[in-house]
Length: 144
Image (cartoon, rainbow, N blue to C red):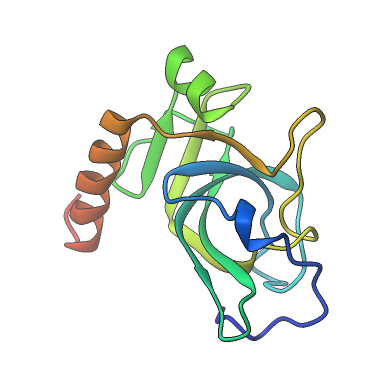
């Protein structure tokens, strides 16, 4: 998806745009309907930016609690309790590095959970960021 393929969304203010490695509550779209918000789930921010009109957009990685220990460079797991707490996750979560989307940072796709001021639910620990960067490099190089 490219910025600009969406219209009529209720954008969050750019002042609350998440940073790379933030975890957010995201209604990640299904493959069959890439412009339709899906079921709420955690997402991991790779990039945040403003489009030519000043609207906030993010590149977000799909998160799931299904089979969080699945191996492979395309699967990045947050399974330790301390890490889960930092990320705002209620259970072990696997982020699928081969499944990401460029989405408008809009209320339709990103919602604040009860008691939270923004859709941002946490942040990946610095050492986990380094592990993720190495893992993503291996994946991009086609190594398994």
